[in-house]
Image 1: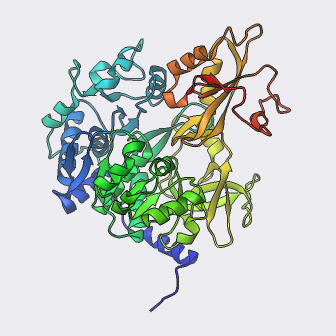
Image 2 (image 1 turned 90 degrees about the vertical axis):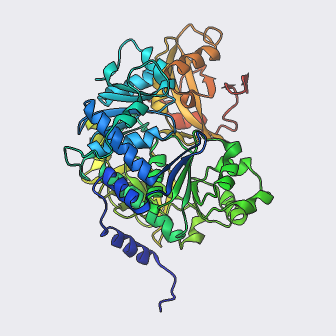
Image 3 (image 1 turned 60 degrees about the horizontal axis):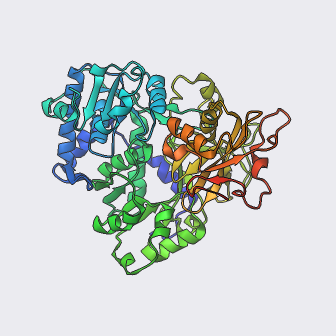
Length: 546
């Protein structure tokens, strides 16, 4: 018997074997297969609403909805936007659209009218499924965006609109059969990501993308602990994480416990009450719930983390007897890197792990050549099922792809053993409490204010949210801070940006910005060597100057 410890080479061989295993052709087929296996077992519990659905009920409701949507004109290839809360409606509509062969466009529920209009127009959305709570935003628009008409808007919840989501489900035929074949190479999602160079871009993601993602995630966690069943999902479903976690849970034959919205104060109670085995664990929740007798009541067997300090990794291991494992993924490629189950020691070192199944990974220098061991360079990824490209963005596609390789824009290094470590980000992205904020998008909104001549937006450290948004602004000649007070600028931002994108800190520039030789604003020099990045700024949250 082989008693030697696994090696990196063993792990890569195991992952290559996974690539030989058959995967379902489509999302609809996958859900049908899992329903046949698990039938009346609870698949999902929306505990804030008191709703539980079995595997069979999800499969049946998705077919009924698909039938009604088809009767209402949805066809293979139609772009259907979803702006829904974290209820059953989101995954059921997604599955139904996948069964038809239509394309789902998730819309951030926090978006303002301007942001909604941008995504719906850019995505060429033809239909919209929307929560009644958000209907006033749509009605306040001068004209319906994109290709949408009121007769192609379906509303979930109480409203005076004639097309009701629940009625669509009830009226549909559970024996629905799609008239057109749906395969793994068909488009399933136009998943908008804030990106790092401006307004959101739609990632074109196929059925194969999601099947690779969820099956790989399930096998990886099963390798760590075969008894993982109860999964907590707390992020909004319009992000990719809840979608793959939901499908991963179905593959595991488990039960997803889904929160309507995140609550740090209730987080530990959820873990105990629902006997959660797996979740993405936000570091602020660890700080919000100090060690105590209740730790013994947790059933955690695997947790995913992102960017934690070593002290936090050690704390969670000692408190909950579970190893916190990092990884690397992004909307464009799904899972890129994972820490193996056997690499508990490396997990403390902030490594993102080894290449995931179906993923080839390299670190490249600026000239495109492969970097040496421990040399820092950009992470490039290729493989089956990554994004086709950005929708209607030929320039972004040309910049992001080199043949089959996708350039992530993230800086990494690889150690001699083969483990990958993230060093930083090339692109300008602010990570605020798990939300991606594009500095360029915020700057564009700030500059759209007549009184502002130039703006630069950067990330500053924050103990709770990891990063916060700070804006440097230069007013037009002749204007002063008295003429354009902080409240006026924040009010302008709030009209055009979701709340999480509105800068918390505001700094008025009394001199010119530091600049590069090409006259671009040198953002790094704005905060380089500054002992206190908050000095002289107005703090929106605390309503005071610092």
